[in-house]
Length: 339
Image 1 (tube, rainbow, N blue to C red):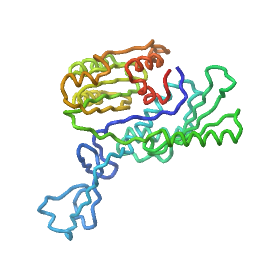
Image 2 (cartoon, rainbow, N blue to C red):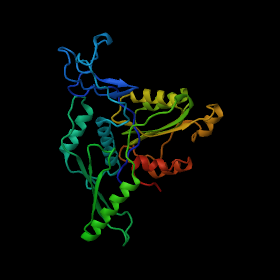
Image 3 (spheres, helix red, strand yellow):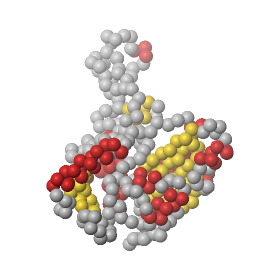
Image 4 (cartoon, one colour):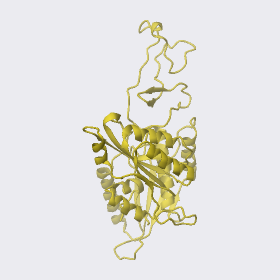
């Protein structure tokens, strides 16, 4: 199955605490990583950045110990945004495996982005990642033309929209200007930007997590996914291969525990692509079962193919999701409508 759309992300969870370069101590507020608060002039010599003195050592505003505490935020961090960009580039590379289809035009920018994600002390990349998708119609049709889509990912993507330009030698300049104007309008009106999710009360919430992994090959990991889901009374499915897809559903606390265990394993890339939270009226067994789309959690393989037999038939995946009433999830994973 070949697709031609740009990818758009779903929700991800906050990474474990890290200190930004040169800041020393990091603070947490309700589980979210926050940078150390800026200290006003008059900080005593020898005090560490982000360190608060004992309450008795703060006698008044003239003591030099006043601290501005940042407000809690649901904004996505720069590193989270960079991680999502890398995961989407990996997915595009998998969807468009031929060299002439998917071309990263600035390899230095890509290397900087990867270095920033993999190294806690790395500085922000100096340039945006840019790539080109060359799309050819699979069926010869007079109304369909070959085109190229040039895309640049701003530093804040996906909290801001990507910069996309469509070009074709078979379209006039006026046609291309009109097409790109319509495309920009469509993106602005129909594509939402991302922020980190806030959660409802765990005790009364039914949660469904849609997890994306660069690949799932390891047999022990696959066994863990099945066993942990059974232990935590979660249902869903796991599609191994490249990319890997995992869906788990059940009580929010159980889903959070499952994700906590899975993310601690060694992965090239793994994140929550989308999250669904539904408030339960009674919270009883019957209400939980009513919300389930899957009866249990099982591994699903869809006609594996490719040189290593590690690529699944995405058309079959779409039909499976459609049967379960989850067809809209396909576009969240792959950026195109399934069929």
